[in-house]
Structure formats: structure tokens, C-alpha cells
Amino acid sequence: MRPILVTGALGQIGAELTPALRKAFGAARVIASDLPEAQSADGAYERLDCTQAEAVADLIGRQDVGAVYHLAAILSAIAEDRPQDAWRVNMDGLYNVLEAARRFGCKVFFPSSIAAFGPSTPRRHTPQTTIQRPTTIYGVTKVAGELLCDYYATRFGVDVRGLRLPGLVSWAAPPGGGTTDYAVEMFHSAARRRRYFCFLRPETRLDMMYMPDAIRAMIDLMEADPKRLRYANAYNVTAMSVTPREIAAEIRRHTSLFAVDYCVDPKRQAIADSWPESLDAEAAREDWGFSPRFGLADMTRDMLARLGAATGRFDDPVSSEAPNADAGIG
Ligand code: VAH
Image (cartoon, rainbow, N blue to C red):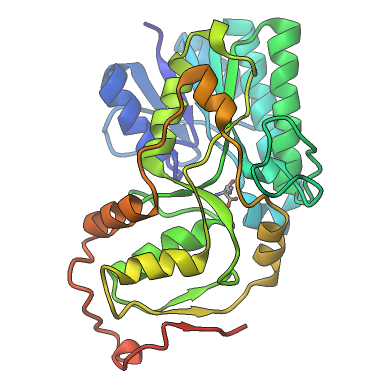
């Protein structure tokens, strides 16, 4: 079978997707790529800047790549600070991958996001097909990316598939500049017995999913019978619709002294407020059997076990007193 290329392989998703692909398909078949030079040898790695069309075409053609998981992108919060870079990386990068896929006949996975929706989208049980008028540059690149993928599927027959991913919670790699990163940071703070200062309001409800479920969904979709897929890309997927207060309360069931203060970041709060609260993932269930295994309780248990926060003991004098668990600040 032809090799699989992962772009942005050193990021939050790539850090877990790459080993999962190597376990499923053989280490020799999976080429990791990202901006930095050579990486530690867990398998093949090449430096790749996806904004460079010739470099993308050269790697995919030279290695006879059969499938690309295209993860390289600038996420929502950083994108708002650098909208020009976000357009260039997120759109030129995707265009270069789709062009190479057209030329060399390979499949493409494109990670869209709940960010592809905006304030005029129905916020609860957001349908698979609905209004998409995002107000962030990250969301604009995701909607434009979905449309570009649809065009390459229809006009050139490129087999492109994708998911509208919710916020992803993972332990293996730090998140990189997203709005849903608070959920990951909260677990890491609990593991270090530290008070967490949350940049979103306690009642901000967003779709989330544990990384193992996201990885399985990506691979299941890419391996699905194409005849079953009604949508070229961008299936809604989610595992839970939760708030910072709910995650903090679930963590405190394991480490009783964990405390959260709320210091709202207006930029990231505005981004989160423009996104839906809960997606309808029925199309993914019907077409290719999407079925997440982790809810909030199971995810929390697994995250804390993996991050080693077994005792709930704090060594931070700030939090040695009985915490006012959800002191609302900001
Ligand atoms: C972000 N983690 O926060 C990403 C994701 C749904 C959010 O796209 O930007």
C-alpha cells in the first residue's frame, strides 16, 4: 500500500494521529512532516512547509503518497492575531495539498471545525447542512476549505474527506493557540496541583471530544466505503457539550483541592461565543458508524490517570487553603 503523509505532525492532533497510523498500517508506511528540521526517529520524518507548492508536490510525488492527513494550520486564537498568516497557511497549504492530490491521485483528510459555524448558525443540535457565516478568520478558512475540498472532489474527482472537529482534549502534546485549549490546560493544572485561571466564562458551552475518539473517527472515515459517504468532507462530530464549570467539577471528583479562577480573555470569549453549543452528528453515525467512547467522566478519569494526578495533593501555597473552587474573576 502507498505511504501515508501527515502534515503538521508535531501538533496536538498529529502527536497522537501519527503513532496511531503507524500502529494501524505499519511504521514504515507513515511519513510525518512539519516545519522543524529532523525529529527523533519514531519513523520517517521530513521537513515540509505546506505553503510551498513545489515542496508539497515534490514530497507527495517522490514518495508516491497515497493518502494525506493535512493537519498543518494556524488555530483560532493565534489566527485572530495574525489573520494574513492564517489565510496563507490555512488556505495556500490546503490548496497545495489538493493540487498535489489531483496530480498524483491520493486521498486527502481535511480537518474542518465547529469554527466553520458562526453567530447566525443554530446553536443547539447544529445540523449537518446549515448557515455557515463565521466571524473569525480561522472559521473563514474552514468554510473556504470545505468549499475548496468539495470543488476538488466534484471537478477533479479527488477523494477528499473531513470532519468538523469540536474542541479536542489530549495529554500527549500541548495545544497550540486554540480557543478550546482551556480544557487541556485545566487537566494539566490539576495534574500539577495548581489553581487554574480559565480564560473563558464558567458557563461557556462548547462541543468537545477526547483525542482517542477523534483519532479513531479520522481513520474510520478515511477507511470507510466511499459509496456510503453523502458528504465529500466536513461531517459534524462531537462526544460531549460541556462548560468549564462542568469540567472543573468532574476533575474535583478526583482531586478535591483543584480550584479554578475565571479571568476572561475577551478575544477568546468572543470566538467561543460565536460557535455552536452542540452539534448534530447523526449523518456521521449513519454514513460511517461514528461512535465516540469517551464522555466527560471517562475522559477525566483517563486524562488524570495519564497525567498522574492520582493524589489530589497541592504543593502550591496559594492553593493550600480550602479553595473557593470557582471564584469568579473577570
Ligand atoms: C481551536 N482547537 O480552538 C481548535 C478547534 C473547535 C476548536 O478548531 O481553535
